[in-house]
Amino acid sequence: MSRPDPSHSLNLQALANSSQPLSGTVLLQNLERLAHETIEPKPDLTVNWQADAELRTGKSGQQDTWLHVQASTSMPMTCQRCMGEVQVPLHIDQWYRFVASEEIAMADDDASEEDLLVMAPQFDLLALLEDELLMALPLVPMHDECPVTPAFSAGILDSPDEADEKPNPFAALVGLKKI
Ligand SMILES: [Zn+2]
Image 1: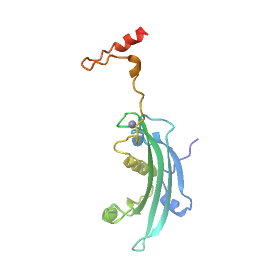
Image 2: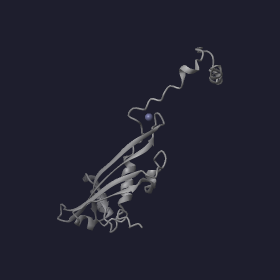
Image 3: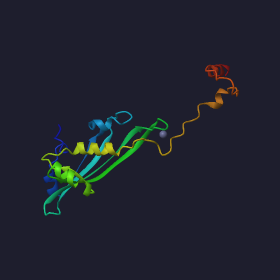
Image 4: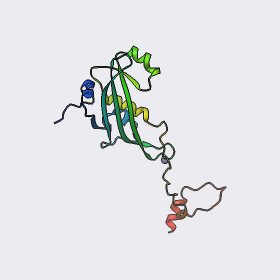
């Protein structure tokens, strides 16, 4: 049994009229573009989100719809320094103001601190969330401090310390046989 997910076709007016924010959890694998950025898809990874809308009176007396979106998740990515797995926390906390048309959005964009979106009867909140999370990804994911990998059995092999000789790949086997 599954009920329709309201986050794909959000009714902004209803949300603005409600005093309760809408919140939910979406599986990362359902956000395909974002899931593609992980080291490997894991079925249990989730994104927690919350959305709230309100009406505010604009400069010329019009009622504007504002949307507040928050989301957080942790993405397993490949560290570009040690190539190991690094958990990248992502947080979104963003306000949007809805405007009537693309033209208004273009004209007002430079003067507005908030992001502008064009009002639509149905609004795909999850698509917006995914866009924001993709933009929040680090260009070069990296550990703050890479985990130290144990030095590869340097002591055990007891290799001769002659710098001018190429290391013999079979030295390790020989060494093991002696023991
Ligand atoms: Zn690392």
